[in-house]
Image (cartoon, rainbow, N blue to C red; front, side, top):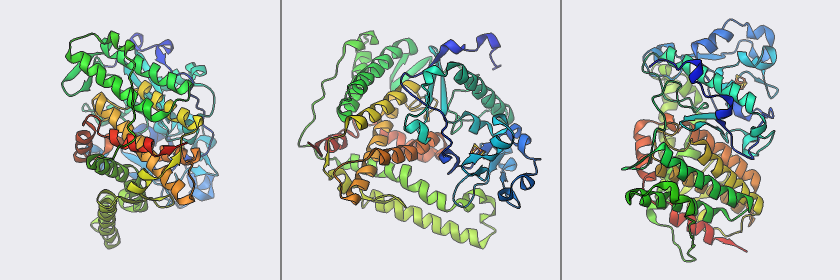
Length: 473
Ligand code: SF4
């Protein structure tokens, strides 16, 4: 397929921007750690011949990039080059909290992924839905100018995103690649993304029908956000709206009528967590919050896998890594003990049952804004999320919320406090969104396993009810 002509491009007016969402980079530098940033050939050509060591002593005699051209040509690497992070996981170009490439040259010299982070753009028949990921402290805290006031600039980034994906695609050959970790967008020449939407297995509707459901969900969550309503009933209500849509489709009714459906959510005071939901959430907690911290400690291994089998030190590390993964997984999934270095050592069952005071209006608003943004930006299902059907993607959001609650309740438990703190939530969401972003990059077996777990209707309902029951006046 050929790239659409310029006249086919969505215009700036067709950029659909979420209301009340703010973002401008605050230069905190947190986005620049924990990644090995991928560079296209074009990105690399802008920085490869610079004598970085002569420009800053921190860059002297330091390996700055990793060459993955061979793996890239064999289709085993997403990019031909990567940045080589420092031992603490920060980007080597992050100096005194700022990007040295940007400061020395300009924004356009940075790797494309860095230029476009943390925005997501999803092309649909309605227009281009904009989102921001929460793997940035400024976005998670909703700091900066309103996105609605930055239309022209954000449209410029959208065009850059298309260019970046086109460059990647041309470098990767005709087969193309999956969306980038940081730039989640449908490829410019993708065939009719979202012409149809899979609500659940066997329940597929055209976009024109789906949009009624989508609008109603966003309006329902917005109303709860404005009134600072308790979040858990809001989350369950949103799920009920999706289930009602499924029922309407099976009755062959138009989804236009979904706007009249107001879910009645009754929370049981006697709920008990089901074994299936406890084990599933423990697995998700391990994958999203524990596994990445173990992976980060063995980055030499990840950065130079090719050498691992020829290097006794790396081979030893590989053995240690595998045993740590295994021990941590068993501890979390079987014994429900989850340890995140530097953060709470959480017993998942204890955290779940720990009684806290009801969430403050500010925290309820924080959760509702997050959910509204995820639903609006369409990054939780479909092309940006491993091709998940909508119900599956929604369950992954519920799992995300529960993991965040378990983490921050664990922190409250550690402090002996009955209140969860917003700053703990910022940290939890920052970590969770990073893993959420890379969902497309998990090994296929894991993606398939998670897809099966998340496709179970109401899989986490009992956990939500227990979390709610354990909030007191
Ligand atoms: S290249 Fe610059 S913007 Fe990109 S991760 Fe490194 S320091 Fe951050």
